[in-house]
Length: 84
Image (cartoon, rainbow, N blue to C red; front, side, top):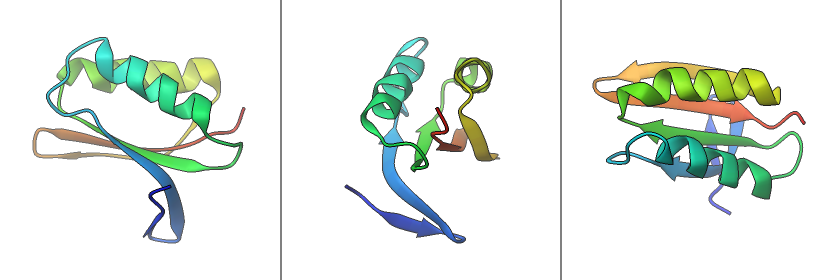
């Protein structure tokens, strides 16, 4: 695993989905989430504008907590926590 500390949040895995377009960032995020245990956090970086809405909607639908979301230039940075 690629563990990283981010302001007291332990990131178990990171997915760099930059350069991928809808629906690929969503598919890869879902697949990564399925490999993690409950309570683990993971980071997703995407630059497809559609990923903003897609990943917010996916998190709500799957009860995945968005611990952090920010825009960093063209990058959309999500930190999710698997809760279900």
